[in-house]
Image 1: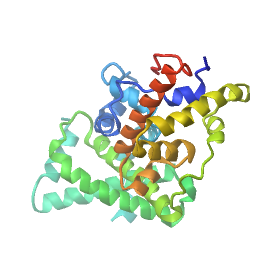
Image 2 (image 1 turned 90 degrees about the horizontal axis):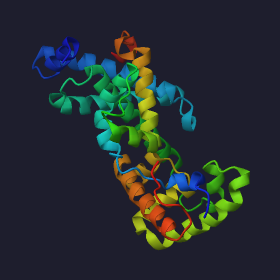
Image 3 (image 1 turned 90 degrees about the vertical axis):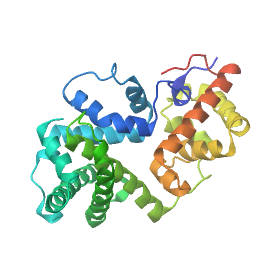
Length: 82
Length: 204
């Protein structure tokens, strides 16, 4: 029997995984829960499962968390945007 | 829905000057968000400077279109700005992928199976064991996957093509390719478990 290792982990799938579109449709709620210090896994197990498996969505999610933490939405607009 | 979000939704679903004003504010917001995300990713794939800002503008433009198309479905489960931010970030990610694809193209079938374990982080002490599994995996990719699954799996795992770049190459999207990979991974795992290369119950 071969040890699991990274190759075995690559092939693991989680049946709760909702996929990119469904996860991303809920990520705004999920991110606010995380930013508030709550644990969203119980409410959104499929999103948690997806973010654990999908590198691109996890990266985007990190970007969203950074913006919430930095309050980007509440900053004044850049003059160059007009 | 919180009062600030209500103002956004009312403005964007209004008509006349109120709508125009809300759209202008939305675009300014999305551009700020797109620039922040593009800046966070600055240097990835060598994208920086004016190229990066142009990419942020394109992302903000497309995110605004998506937000306006979907705003009537926004139910206030989060702040409006958080909901809108998700569109900006998603567009930035897609623009990075398409930019790299247009600039560099995609080189398929140039990767080496032998480099896969190390790329995935297999330590030297496990490389010998991994080789047996790798050979079994390689055979399973040929025998068990559909041609499309094989193309996607090899491109992402063996050739190391980023998913967004492959989506641009294949005229597909992230969700479709992820679904293809999900099915391929499940099929390969089951095959390798059946043949004793991996233990059953491969849940994360």
